Length: 84
Image 1 (cartoon, rainbow, N blue to C red):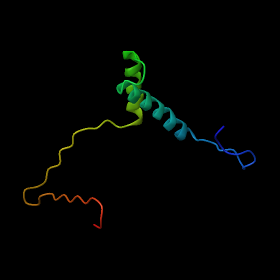
Image 2 (tube, rainbow, N blue to C red; image 1 turned 90 degrees about the vertical axis):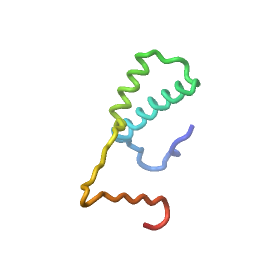
Image 3 (cartoon, helix red, strand yellow; image 1 turned 135 degrees about the vertical axis):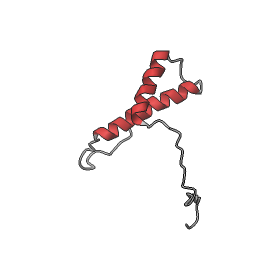
Image 4 (cartoon, rainbow, N blue to C red; image 1 turned 180 degrees about the horizontal axis):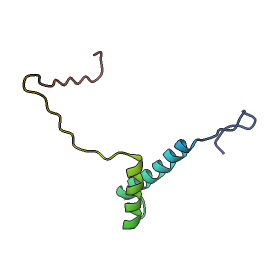
């Protein structure tokens, strides 16, 4: 069985945040397997419940409009890798 060997010290105590992350990953994994056809069919209520639970864990993406002043336009610089 995987895990810490006996006599390795204090037992590991998981906090509530860690337990929540594990639960969220299980829900997300099941939805992914369902979408890829690897998971048996889920009922619509199961899919809806999973969507609601994930909505609490991950923020929904929203469109954002950024505008600048004509006299002082906004500048955006994107650097991928390398030095700034």
